[in-house]
Length: 385
Image 1: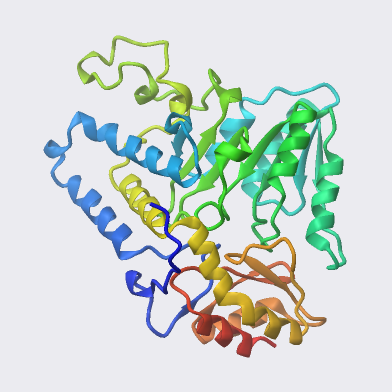
Image 2: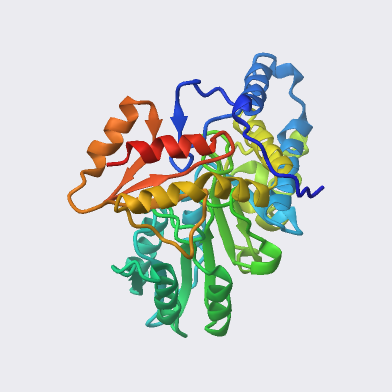
């Protein structure tokens, strides 16, 4: 049920130390007590394996897929696969791309390495061009101009555009709807890295209709490490998985007939699940995290982050920091340093005061969430050089 009620600070639901200001969800989220409890129950279940039933290999994953589908406004949960990492999702995607003669792949500059390496390897193997679109140097309309340059790079030789929704380093939002429109006109795919946005910034598969969406679980999905979820559109139906585990085949729920080998896979994206996708510890943890996000509601999470940052940006600007002003999420953003500032030295000093952000290149990356307060951001502003 949708709610228009404003979220309040949810810090009591987490195990964060009371004297710690954690503004680093983009590094990895803290686990809530609810998620930790789910993991504890999963761990204990392995102590009594005789209580694990055949249905436990399948039903928990189906529930997680259904909840994740709600989170991203997807009508068909069978298009979701469970992976151990975002890189597994990208590897599966490039394993099924069809190259074009004189083709190219377009991506914003400074992509996360797991995204970049998958597509750069494909480009080298098939002799296609990788077009990295660097951000403008000038901050006047920077996000808008970066989006424009990205759109201009897409043409009829483009195989796919692979982009995050909110840039993983500085939070610049890419206009995925405009990119989707251009890729359709150019017969190209749209591959979205949702790791730094899904769960905190609204995204609708129903409205956007990308060809794939990859989301690591340990950041804004607020789950554990070593898990991820990937949506596969119809382009990938009948494609080639990167491994051949037994559970992805038709009839795999009949443990007495596993050696009656099956050529057919279970429907749609099921063929792309990682082996041991019934993971009795991480899967229920991620499921609990996604359920919590559904209760908080993504639009309310984003608005809550906005209420935390309104005063902060004014204070940062007065100290000479630059940042994206128009196309920016409030759950993740970068502050570019004033001339001569040593970013690493600053973040080290902040950490000594138990104030946690990330140093990324020549900027500070800040990523608040529902366990933060406006005062946390004001404390950070006071400490900025």
